[in-house]
Image 1 (tube, rainbow, N blue to C red):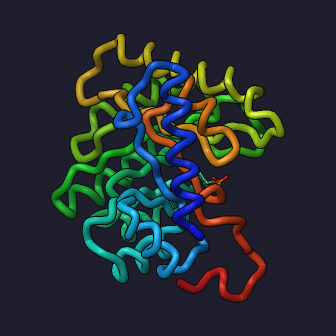
Image 2: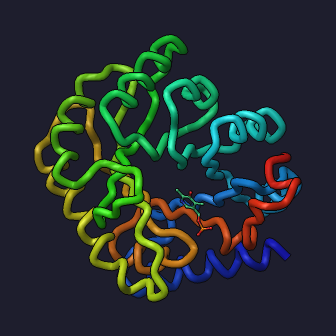
Image 3: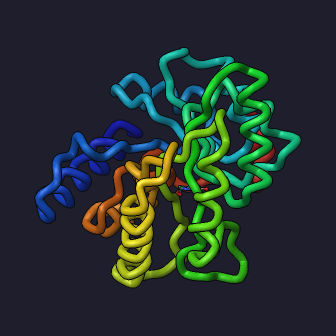
Length: 236
Ligand SMILES: *Cc1c(COP(=O)(O)O)cnc(C)c1O
């Protein structure tokens, strides 16, 4: 049962919080529902979860239109400029902003829709060749430029840590992301808040919480393995 998976994740979040003296209320759990059908999302929704994550703009749009309006959709995947229109007005936050150009394109689409779009800067904190994201040394100039945009609000940082067998190996990366966010916060830049640290997935969310995550993104741990090969994988 999906709800048993969810309860187990919630229990492990509580345990991680108690290990490091944090409150579970300070952690937002995003149920990452990419490739999963609306029926499964409905099961998790019925247990009180309201934050869901998708990595494809059209899939987010389609699910948004089919599911209850009080769901908070998070765009967590790589975003192309021509697809921004699908997520503005539907997503509550875009986690995957990795260039000033993309932030500016989101800003102009948000302006057209007369709203201010909350965003996170995606950081390639471990410097992996194959990953999207700003390199740590680029983040400060990114932040300075984005602070001038009127229709986006930079709320914090996001990272996808390396895929490792032992989650302890990622502790240093989570710690480094938190240090970076503190450095930025200490500069007190207008329009920049740095309240959110979106880090930790099924494999490593407990370590991420111990290192200061405010948002964890859990897919497999709630919904089970994803099947990208099945014909139904793209259906909703
Ligand atoms: C798929 C995905 C997740 C969830 O991954 P799991 O290992 O299934 O928990 C989290 N964040 C991003 C950006 C993803 O694309």
